[in-house]
Length: 243
Image (tube, rainbow, N blue to C red):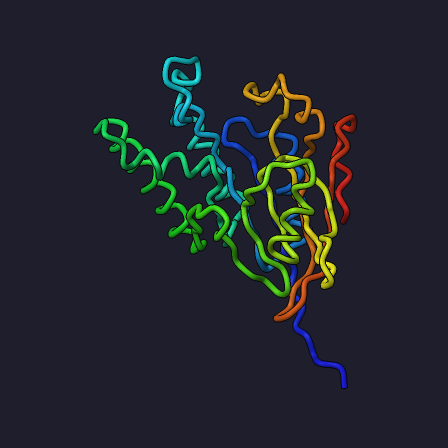
């Protein structure tokens, strides 16, 4: 006898990076959401860039990057997206770390930004998952969702081998890979929603040429997920949405 499953729809994005987001990509994702009407919408982290909060920013041009426009843009997208599950990525983790800074001005600014993020998520009844490295995850169906921690060329495979079926962001490289385990896990890397040339800190890295925009969508029930990756070709300015 086949079990009766109540399938629902989901949408997952990551790495929009506040003011560095690509307006065309953001508009495409929001259009897809309106048409797809997911029951669960997830931002997997790095919804802000926090350039001025970077540990190596002191004494560099990054230290002059405005804070408010970046945070405003990140939180505006969270609201527009209507996310009900919001992960903090390693870029948001910078803010939490500096909340304990010895400099009271830095500490108080960081705490103020944290309060803004928490308030926005509370207002739209979204669960906020603080960054917790390798332990940060939420399970939906038979997949684990997380920001991600591994950087390698095989990050999707490495995440699958560490966690089983999973969906992550972090590396800005859209892709799907299988883990080398007997349970045959699948790793989805959702990619980024930034305007990639705007990411100055990575403009001399060969790996940046492999970055791509994308999102993950599909259906889930109590014990299963059926997911798909939409990857946007770099040379195609118009988003051909799968709906």
